[in-house]
Amino acid sequence: MKITGVESVTYGCADAKTAGRFLADLGFERIEDGATGATFRLPDNATVILRALSDKSLPRAPVEGDTARELTWGVDGGDELKRIADGLAKDREVKETPDGALHTADDLGHAIAFRVAAKQPLALTPPVTNAPGARPRRNRRADGTEIRVPKIQRMAHVGYWAPGDLDRNMAFYVDRLGFRVTEYIRGVGAFMRAAGSNEHHDIFLARRGERRGFQHASYEVRDVDEVMLLGSHMESRGWETHFGPGRHIFGSNIFWYLWHPAGALLEITADLDWVDDGWTTRYHDGLPRGAGSWIARPIDNRRIPFRTREEDVIIE
Image (cartoon, rainbow, N blue to C red; front, side, top):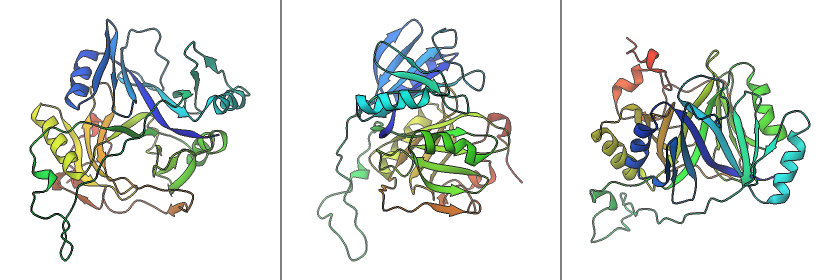
């Protein structure tokens, strides 16, 4: 089966109005507004759906309160969708809604859905960069000197907390859904890409004690400058940074994490690794020092990455 990537995230939150302002400031296009929430769309046709916690149509989540309630995966055709339905129905309930989407849950209790992929590929031109001895940009300034507010372009990946046995938690995605493991960190987590995707990872299962629930959703802009410009814009609008900017080692991507009013975190990212079947799974005995190869704010080296607000203390 060929799952192509994340198509949509549905949140249940107490303050959908504030969460909607947050997404609008990031450049998400509001395409639907109602009494119980709103729907936003990205240039790649991915969507983010906000619903009030009181909305009885929301699936259950492993944790209470503001959080992602359902993640929708794209599939490369109706035949593949049927294969997924037939395979998963052997040991769990699978419901089909009038729009043709399938709804079920993974082994961690997260609601997941599948639909024929609707996301559109984007073809952005990367910036021209000069380096010593290589000066292809001539007689013009760098694109990053233009003062602007970039917009999120596409949905990149998601992360879940996965308590318990990591291999068992991975098995549902690998054995049942055909995901490939790109990097495996013993006792810490696993990065996996869908079979129809060239992302370094479409999902990250992370283990930290018994923590469970949704960790983050990641959205891509064109380049490093746009991460910096958009992250700075969000802070100027009063939104709070979780940590970053910096560069991850796993996936190589630039990151800037914000606290999401609808729950968990939102990552602004750029320059992610592109992999295919020539990539060999890499195994690691532990995390390298720090959350990335570099982090711009020294204080972030004294904070727990992917922390809860209760853990937001400076480590002396």
